[in-house]
Length: 84
Image (cartoon, rainbow, N blue to C red; front, top):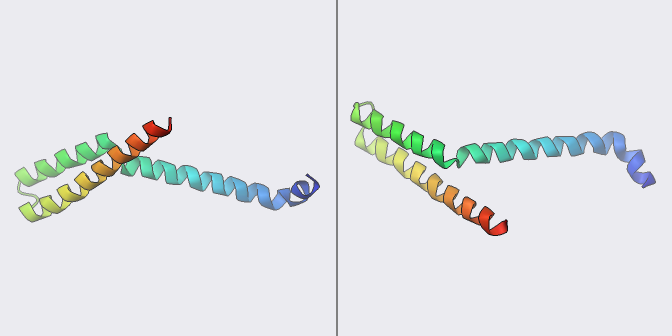
């Protein structure tokens, strides 16, 4: 207990920084693997393909990446449900 009090001026800010970094990482992961956002991105890519803004090859590359992230999102959601 006494040691914790002595190291509090150093450990306190470090603990806070670690907590903030964890929250930022969680928010970034949630954004990266948000199924609704991924579907929206896929729809936008389709619209860009139809308007001629993207070639078929560019669209397929984008589509493949988004589908992979969507699969990962579903795996993460299933894992969270199993933990609950």
